Image (cartoon, rainbow, N blue to C red; front, side):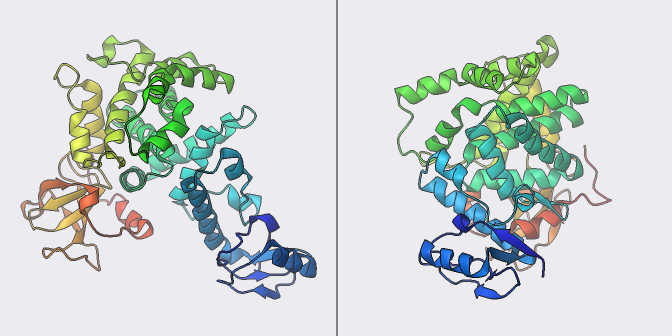
Amino acid sequence: MNLIPIEIDSIRIGYPLPCDLVDKDGVLLAKKSFVVRSKDDLVMFHNRSNGLFIDGLDAEALHKAYIDQLQTMMRNDKSIGEIADSKLLVDKAVKRTAVTDDRVDWRDLQVQANYVLRDPHKESFIDRLEHVHQILFKESLRNPNGVLFALIQLSATETEMYSATHAMLVSVICGLAAREVLNWPEPVDMLLRKAALTMNISMTELQDRLTSQKRPADAFQQAHIADHPQKSVELLQAMGITDSTWLDAVAAHHIEGPGGLRSKAPAHRLARLIQRADMFAARLSPRLTRPPVSPAVAMQACYFDENKQVDEAGAALIKAVGIYQPGAYVKLASEEVAVVVRRGANTSTPRVAVVLNRSGMPTAEHAVRDTSHKDYRVVASVPHHEVKVHITMDRMLPLTQTAPTDRLW
């Protein structure tokens, strides 16, 4: 048994334990599901056994319990200080791990991105931001379909940590467009991704609040929204960011600027791509004041500029991620409803996995269809809120891996 020490203050009083609690010799103190009624009980366990420990094999269960705890605190509108004081039930190495067995724990990454953007500290900001950025970048290279699937599913189904999820999705789709379509050099691509991640850093908390607010933004909130590009620049400078292209792209990411990318200054090229991706991702998110639209509708809205002309940046985004992106739902000519798992040979023929059969019943097995075949062509996009089926991320993500026969445009 590989024992891992845990902090006494990290165990949730009044909640079932997610795994067995043991002493330093592995002797059982409290079984999984035991409800700790008071801190005095924990102190008694701790003093009796010279510490509290868990089996290393239970680290994943504890990790998920930690994520649930943080999300509960956010739902209850706890302060950043209270949330930051929450301790993970496992040691530091487990706390900082977002990738296990080549799989990203997307909920953990949400939490990490949320901390970076919502509670920045100069001493750790650059390192924490780079940690999140590198995971997104490496996964985008290794399995871009999987990254899109995870972030689009989370964006369309959750309101908690909206701002962090939104920033990650914009960063990823901007990077895909820059690399796969526009052929921008890697240093420019890197600045683009980081600018997208940090574009709203000065209004992260407000963005999260607006997703669950029943009324439209008031005058004070509207002023905050209007000022946030410049305020974000100032905050980034305070955190030690000095790159002028990065800062200028953040400052300009809400400026309307139709026209070709080549005619723009370097930072404004980045800002235009971010602006169109920002528009797409914002339409995916559910809010109390409006339902989300389907990813296909959101992407098509970005295709035309302010003058109703084809937008170069918007077109590049569509070519990179498709009209029907991984994570989106579609109806097929076969009358099945499926979720997109891989981009296909062109923007409108993705690979999909069936989730509802012709009778509208959930499927036990998710058959993969090639929508370039006429029998399985996409006939409509389906908004997420209309699909009453639970998607298990761990089960679906393996289907996003590009098959040898797949061709990307």
